[in-house]
Image 1 (cartoon, rainbow, N blue to C red):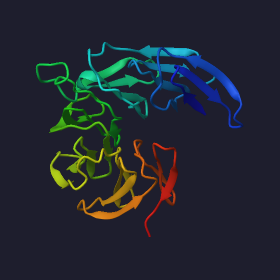
Image 2 (image 1 turned 60 degrees about the vertical axis):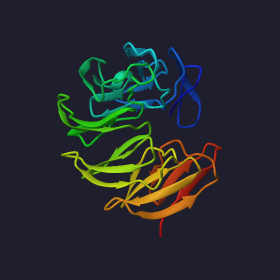
Image 3 (image 1 turned 45 degrees about the horizontal axis):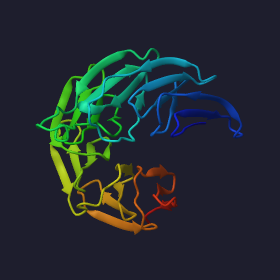
Image 4 (image 1 turned 180 degrees about the vertical axis):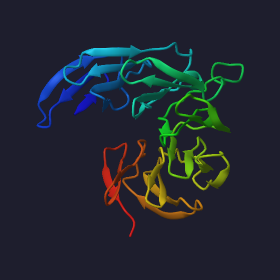
Length: 271
């Protein structure tokens, strides 16, 4: 069990809650560390990715890159699939790293910065990529949603769309919550639109979750919305404590777990 702190500390505990080791990275840790392949993978607030030995916390490799002058404060971490680590960065970049060495397998542009001012040119990938093992998809703020072949990074399709919250994927579609509060369903193979639910305008949606037959999103007023995966129609809306739901809902065996900004934990389900 591993946790990160705002002071850049990485803390490892055993299953009894006893400390095992402690390490430090270069800045605050805004996303949960991940454990894979005998490594603890940590992303720091300055954009670096650290691979630490899961046994003792010693550094195995480090990936870093130059960042634009102005970026969106991001809680996005990494997506790990088999031997690959996939991470989005400022400037609309998505990078695939070898988990054992940290070497770059490929780098692609989800979006290209456009505009005159630094503010207009922000095109950051602020959320985690998703994959089905064949393609990997990501979305950028003030940019595009795009899918790439996971082996070589070749683009499969791309569409103009802006999102900070991020996306989810099932066997058929990619689902994106955009900056205006609309939820989009697009065919995973072609990028063709399947449906759009635009009745949640300006509600600052969370990252979507696929749960059984629904796309689940939380909003700034603490409501959790269950949307049909088939046609985008609303199936239910459930209130929590009235404070924003920022993090992606989590699927449990018998419901959906959400955490609110006020610290409430709620497990919600549909009959």
